[in-house]
Amino acid sequence: MAIAFVVALLVALLTPLAVHLAGRARRAPPRRRNLPPGSLGLPLIGQSLALLRAMRAQHRRAMAAGQDRQVRPRVEAVAVRRADGAPRRAGGEQGGVPPAPAPKQPRSLATILGRMNILEAGARRRADAVPQAGDAAAVRGKDRRRGEVRRHLADRWAGRRTVTVLPLTKTLTFDIIATLLFGLEPGAVREQLADAFAGMLEGTRSVPVDLICRSPRSATASGRSSATARRLLEATVS
Image (cartoon, rainbow, N blue to C red; front, top):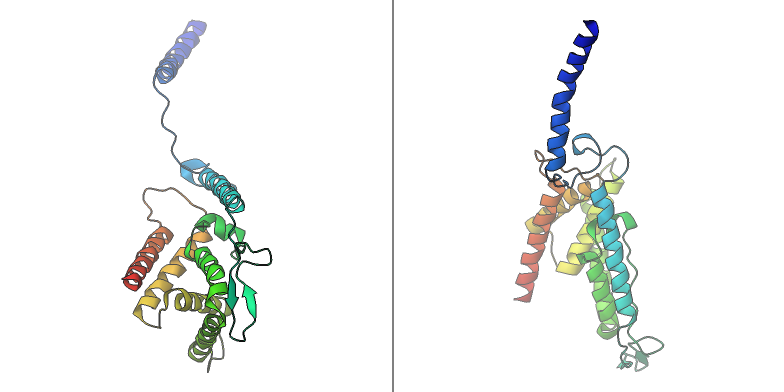
């Protein structure tokens, strides 16, 4: 009697489980969600799988861009007359296109933001324009950088007993970039860009988590800064 009761209990417990497994095997596998490993999409150890895939894709694009620059046809050297009358070559010692400058930003930041951003593009444009622009443009850029440093020291350092060096250094760097690339003077537009840039930097120091109930503030800040920069460029071109 006891054995029959145990057998009946096992059958009653195992039958629904077998039916559930059989039905699950017949159904199509569920679509994989783009979530980091871990319970409820929260990363447990290291970076998320989505970030690793993005890093590999970015590395492949960087390698392809490097190969494209290597096979690019080389042009003839152009003799440019300097102010003192001494000729110099715009194409380097061998008469070709000067090599693209190496990225100056950290590798981790370049992985998240990508190589195709305004900082790297500006560095390449300056490297291409310096041989043709002459010494006057370099002097003007140096004077504008010195002016930004003096204004920054007078506004944020003078008369204060305690200062936060790292945030102020980031602010100075952003002010110099805004002045040299966009020609922005201190004002409301620069303050908006600075706030969006600070919010975007917060996202570079965090691990991406795909949660429905959460709004990515860094992505929103990046979108605001991109829209503002686009309007500035359109106004400058027009």
